[in-house]
Image 1 (tube, rainbow, N blue to C red):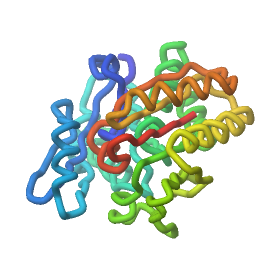
Image 2 (image 1 turned 180 degrees about the horizontal axis):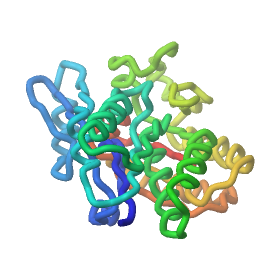
Image 3 (image 1 turned 30 degrees about the vertical axis):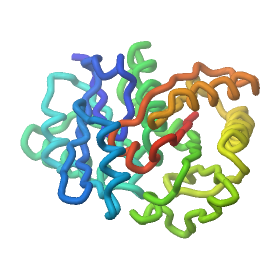
Length: 278
């Protein structure tokens, strides 16, 4: 019967993974002015970034409906693993939970694990790849469920963005102020504490910020096991390769996977943003 991984559309799969039948994405919806954009495989990143630049309003997102998740669970696979955006950032997790209740009311119990990633983008992908490795290695649903939640609790997410403005305007910087020191080219190094965005450090210039982010990530990674380091980039493949080289130069002993942001991550990361999870 096999397994299936269901993600909201902030699970930034690689191009190859998008062709893999084991993965299914339930899209969020993006709104720029009066335009509604479904964050699916037809998402036009360049066109979307242009719309955002030209808009005077702050773009918004809407999470998938419970019915959309319920439909994703209606499949022949026996084991379903659902990975959502941090519940501090989106209602996707709650929708996925309600969708599970709707499914079980109609069809009865099924192995459905819903994971609040307490992250986004590369953090969601890191969890998805770990599930694949465990399931393909013959591990059962209960054991995978225990181990992936333990991994979720250990996982760290870091990011460097050219601007925190869209996070601020959408209320995703609770307890923090966006940086307005752009004239000094100060770039904050940000992270997540159980899904809540926090500031870790800052540096002058994006290159130094990447180096500081990698130094923190590699130092902290020595305290926990893991196979992958996942880099998601928004229209910044050169920056992603730069971060990969810095990580490897610092002696990181993990396989580095690079992916590109889809709609939701593009909205919040902005042009040139880098998100790292390990």
